Image (cartoon, rainbow, N blue to C red):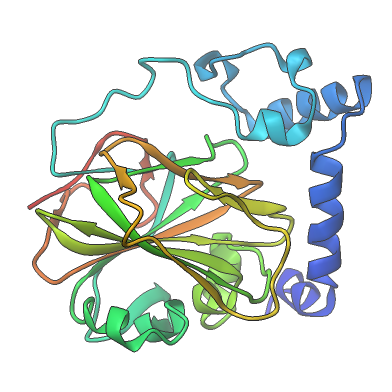
Amino acid sequence: MPFSIILQYLLPKQAITALAGKFSNLQAGALTTAVIRWFVKRYGVNMTEAANADVSSYKTFNEFFTRSLREGTRPLAKADFICPIDGTISQIGNIRKDQIFQAKGHYYSILALLAGNQLLAEKFASGHYACLYLSPKDYHRIHMPCDGLLKTMTYVPGDLFSVNPITATNVPNLFSRNERVVCEFESEKHGTFVITLVGATIVGSMATAWHGIVNPPRYKNIRTWFYADKNIFLKQGDEMGRFLLGSTVVLLFEKESLQFNPNWQATRNVMLGEMMGIK
C-alpha cells in the first residue's frame, strides 16, 4: 500500500478538514489573494472562463473556488442527458446487480452508497452509474443532467479520505464510506435518478441549491429531508449543488433508462453540458 494511503488512515482527517473549511472562509485580504494566485498557477485554473476573472476581487478562497462561469462558456448539448460537471470520468457503466465498479479489484454496493435505503437501492438494480471526479482546477458547481423533481436529500456521515485515482485504487468501498449527500430525483421521462455528492479530505462543505450549506454542521447520524410536497423542480442544466473544495459525484440511473455516450470512457476529461447519454 502506498505511503500516501497509509498516511490517510493515520491522519486526523476530520480535524484537518474543519481547519481547511475555516481557512477557506477567512477574509484575509492580501493573504487570501496570494493564496488564490498560487492556487491558480499551481493547478492551471483557467480564469478566462470565470464570470469574474479578477482574482484580487474574491474576498475568500471559497468565493473563488465556487466561482461561476462566464455566460455561454458551457453550451448545453441537445441530448436527453448532459454532463453535470467539469471533471474526469473515474468509472462508468452498468451496475452488476447491486455492485458498482470502483477500481481494479474493488466494488461497492448501491445499498451502501445509499446508506441502507433498500427501497431506493432496488430501483437501480442492474441500472447504470457514472462516477465523476472534480480536480482542483475544475469548476466546482454541479448541474442537472436532465429535468428532475426533488424527492429527498440525505446527509450520510462518514470518513474523509481523498477521492483521487490513487486512493480509489487502494481504499475499499471509498465512495460508500466517505461523507456524502444523496439527492433523489424523479423524472417524468427517465424515472428515478440519484446525484450523490461525495466529500473528501479538506472538502470544507457541500451545498445544494434548495438547502444551502448542508455541512457543517457534521451530523453524527444519517439525516433525511423530504421534499415530495415542496414541488422543487430543476430543469436540465440548472445548478443543483456545489463543493466548497474538491470531490466526486456519483450518478445512478434506472435500468434501460439511458445509453451512455460511447465516447465516455474511464479517465476521459468531460465538460459541463456535453452529451452524456440518450434515452
